Image 1 (cartoon, rainbow, N blue to C red):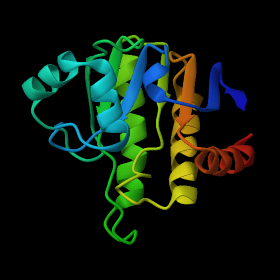
Image 2: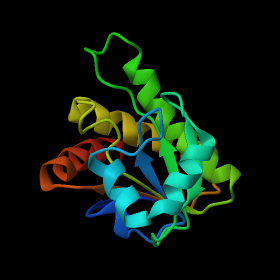
Image 3: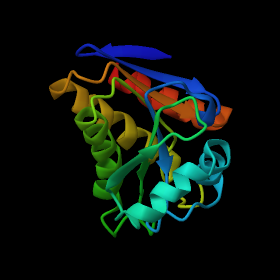
Image 4: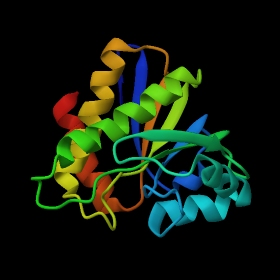
Length: 176
């Protein structure tokens, strides 16, 4: 599923983000950049030790912010590590923090001169963000960004299972 917004193609695909050949893939990291489970663990395993070595040099990343490292052994040249919020009932600024995670990842990609980026469903795993709301915020944040920034040509949302893809697709249709 795809649509173009102000010269940028936004796509939804079902797949494994570690196999993406975009300029950068986004890692749903923890604030210590210490590796972990889910997509974070998969990216570190597939990318090899060079990613963790750079993460250790950076040290940390606050929730809603983003940092960049090498892609190591991945097809993508870079990994943008962003920290989504842990969902705690929606009363702890989670909406703003999740939007910021997407927008700051895109700003960092633009600053680095990248033209393509792939996102996972940030905060939708162990951080327990309600998937319908997370999908809406993810897609809305990306569309808002490309309405005023044309440097990035491709934003791909790589969704790990059919249920997540279907929910993102439902939210995507509302924006197209």
